[in-house]
Image 1 (cartoon, rainbow, N blue to C red):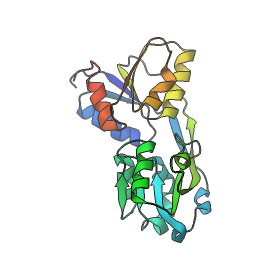
Image 2 (cartoon, rainbow, N blue to C red; image 1 turned 90 degrees about the vertical axis):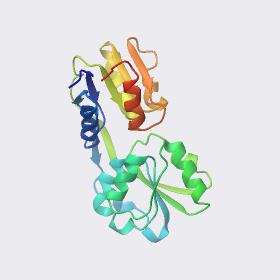
Image 3 (cartoon, rainbow, N blue to C red; image 1 turned 180 degrees about the horizontal axis):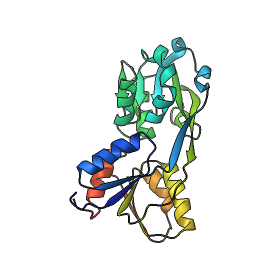
Image 4 (cartoon, one colour; image 1 turned 180 degrees about the vertical axis):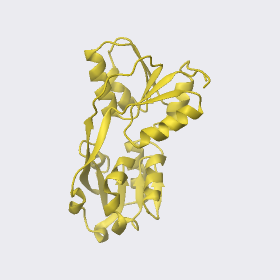
Length: 230
């Protein structure tokens, strides 16, 4: 290792392991300790619209694909619009034949759908507590949301001797900010977006760097620019 420092990977499994592999390749020492745990909602997909009624599926996280993979076979012929490249890869791996990536955040996803579809039902399976309001961003479309997984806070303490922590979602940011407010500790935070960074506002000792694009590539660039040279 080239001395890049210990980086706390807080994202949910299995994605955390992919992030850790990338950090190791860059010379950092990853510490995988997710802040949140994904729990599929039993039989949630039973409430999904019939495939014939759906114009497209909107996917905002690879966690959605993991949660409903067993029920997707009848839907993989429907165009899948994905918030970013990681989610798009998960959709392709799950068998979707037509996959589009917004390569951004939920606002970018809504713009992509609007530019490609003038009408039709948008089926949006996702988290019980979504990070954004897709129906509000698509006022001219019929959007059917379906909670298929929930996220709960994981047990565990904050790792010691950290150089930085990577925050991949607003929910993870809120979870860590709450813990830091209860236990004052200096922390360098690399956040995927302004929304993920917002919970840390006003916390003493927290240095926040926001990626210039809401994806992990930009987070890794931000980490490299934060003074933790490898």
